[in-house]
Length: 191
Image (spheres, rainbow, N blue to C red):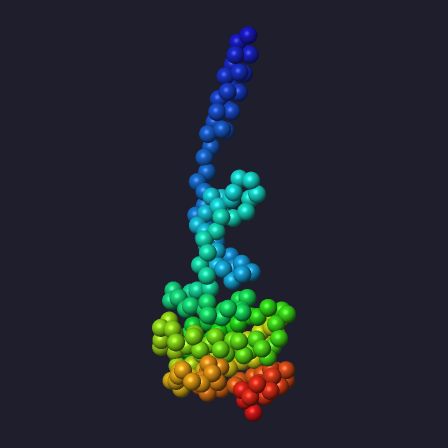
């Protein structure tokens, strides 16, 4: 009988010791970019899971992109973009590079025109102060279709000239595919 009581007490003691083991949740910061160009950031993965379907509860931050120094550059003006990458080198070279991905079914010429028009609004924001040049690389289906370098000191907005023409007047055309070149000639954007 003593053995039975002793074994019972030992079992209870072991179960109690194992049951009280606590682990502190790891503090992790997760950044996820969704297909609709929202940035999702959460501090603790375990706390973000819903009980029923294990999907994340998210906090959306639109299309604002932070460079490595923590400066926010607003890229929400690029409405047709599925992704915008920002490389901010203002401290070293006074240059910003935007890599704009359009939907896979986008037409390269029309997509380039849309991005040029939206670049007008991008150039008017205070977030880009200190940049002498801004390179805009446009990709469709992960293939570069056009690239422009805008000289911010040459950019002169007015209410009469079309926005894309104003951006092009301040830009060097670095690269266009034959399809984009043909579209631009048809639309009389360039010769």
